[in-house]
Amino acid sequence: MSLETISRCFDRAEQCGAAIPVIALNESIRFFENEEKRVSVSMEKYRSVQTQLFNSEILLRAYEQSYSKDFTDDASVVEKSGYLSRRSKVMLKISS
Image 1 (cartoon, rainbow, N blue to C red):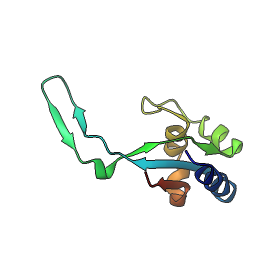
Image 2: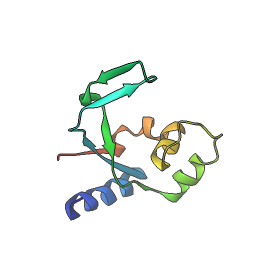
Image 3: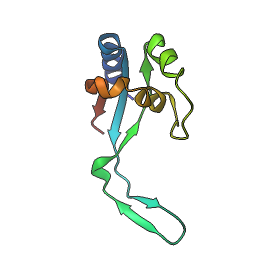
Image 4: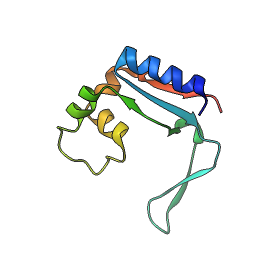
């Protein structure tokens, strides 16, 4: 990740309370429902999450919610709390 991107992330986090830089996938991906059922998935709808920045109050509040099996990282916990859906500009797309 470039210094410019890191700087943009800190600027965005300062403005919005959070920043989650993402990049478009360039690999083929498959959804495995089980060993017999595999489905090709459009890469256009998915992004790879990079380093995440959050205001500590937002992150601590997000972790007060009940556990979900969907939690994979801090960003998923904050997303599930509803914060990111209210702040769509928090996500930063990085051109690869």
